Length: 461
Image 1 (cartoon, rainbow, N blue to C red):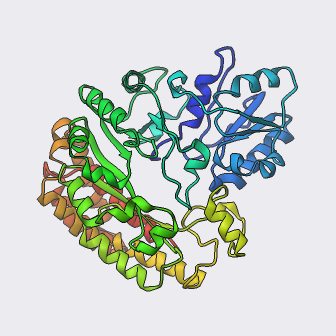
Image 2 (cartoon, rainbow, N blue to C red):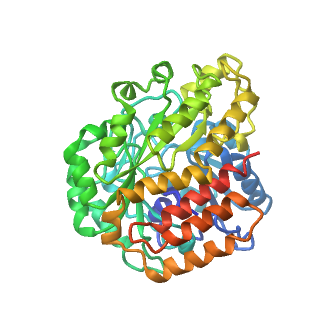
Image 3 (cartoon, rainbow, N blue to C red):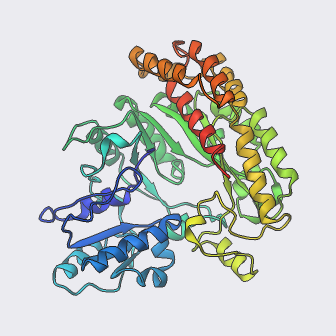
């Protein structure tokens, strides 16, 4: 699995040592219901709310007290309260200790909510010891909270606020260093993802952080706003400190859509120029787009496909517009009677859960499938990979973290095993890729990721 979420490691760090902790992540394993828990805490995102409620209710039937927290219970506390003993609304740093003491005394309150945002400089190091270490590809670190923007479709500003809070640079380096040490069987991954909503929201802090990261010699990725493209010094420092990719929410090609969703910052930039500028520093642009906005039409699908291919965007994340609870988008669509249902399991940005303005829900679903199958077709993937190989794009990454020969050999053998298959496009792709596996310009992990994207695109029905 790509990685874990930080909520549980943070709660583990806030929990006194006298308590015994077990961590279960259904993305990578099963829950051991036989373990005799006294209290169960579940961090919940909207798409997993239904499953989280079922888990909580199963524990309650066993006589175990349950607590739900995270973005969905924070946005829908009354709903969540019907499925558990207690709900944590918002950040837990100021209430978790009190909650544990109340649970010990048998007087758990229905709701816990902090009156203040957490001071990140006082946050202890997240405890990752209980995680299924071998099942994750990357580690997660968060240096800041808050987002200065207020996009209609996003709940980040509602949860974390618009004022930027950050750890100290020393804290971050201490956390990164700790990840490199084997503690309780946990060892750092080859990559770190900085989970900040916008790592350059505080540019002075970002500059100091990037400078401090350089000696740590880690590969890292992050999220940033499009204005990073005009920050040459930051881009240079990012690359020198090990940044291999930056995730940017482009959202839509339509100026009208950008204005209506309050994504004003994107209106100031040429996407193509921003992409070229960032990638000229050897930093891959991971792009994100949303389909089904109010000014989208059936023609928007082909326009997006052309843009992605023309700009050689390697791993675009394509989402269907989703009105998550707590967003202004949810409130607006609800007031317009455009929300089709509240089956939270379908609120994963891969299903249509509302009525679009200029097409039917079925047309939007078909358009989504058309886009992902087009940009992740094997021929398209191969053309993009050749483009980046030709530029020796991963030169820096191959210098500081070269791919081991035995890894290349194992991958080549795996590719050969895929050749005799009924999936003709995949067989042909494997045959064309095998000779390139031993090329020093090639990152095996990139090929694996692209094949996974193809598998996902063609599994959508």
